[in-house]
Image (cartoon, rainbow, N blue to C red; front, side):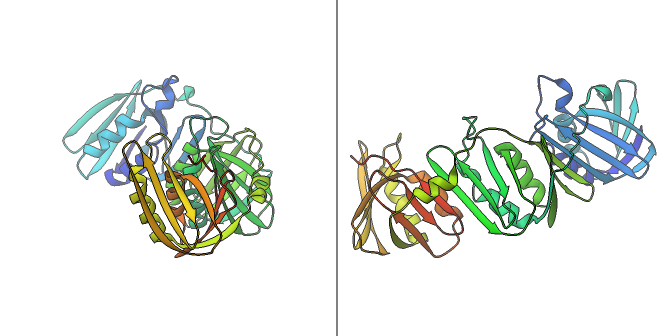
Length: 353
């Protein structure tokens, strides 16, 4: 194997794999990238068995062949090279990586030990705008709980008329829907898969999704991003959402965010609870051994309600809202609250002392 490639092209390519290829993996070859030099360029593949990414890049190939090299070491090396052409020349068990006056020799692992690229017998296919999918991820991913196996994923589904993305950590529920006609499907993406997919989507206008029994792929041109699908039981979010009722209050989003940020500084460090008292005005209060604080906020709505909520959960929901005025539904002290804007955000209440 022998090829030359521009340093900046290679650096941008290797950057895509750094989020899921780690040093010291129990299966050594999973810390490597597979580089396949073919007639018209090179193809780079990396996997951690949950996520697999493959993409092609322009290069001047003098001799075809395949090699695996340490992902992080190669990335750090290329990052320090001068902005010139980088040459790769393979030999048994090693690859010479040269750039200008710099010479190096990096050990490789057998290509045969690298996992095969996942094959997908698609049962459903969909084409979706990358900007829409990115927004759905960013508006729900903050509710994922990586520490709990049942909550460490996003539910992404289509009923044929709309697409929905949902996440929960057991204390809150985030739901985003968009009316778009696609094949029916239902898949689960781990938080890491969703984060890496988001990065990939940043460079694409649209993506084609192929859904199989065990994997789903997100493809465009020479890029192929594959995730292993999860099979965990997900809460009946439609039932939860339909059970949330209450009186409607309309509140200026930025004013509410500022008030919560200030008042929560005196909340209990463990519970992070802030009390919301609704009358003719909203009174946001907190108290702890370290002090107390309160602030009044103008609202539209006149019912008398009191509820305790985790300030962090409310702020994270408000952060992804887009409208100047948000809808805030409150039923009772022991019932969940609901925020509606570009999505629906259910937050479990906390006992008010």
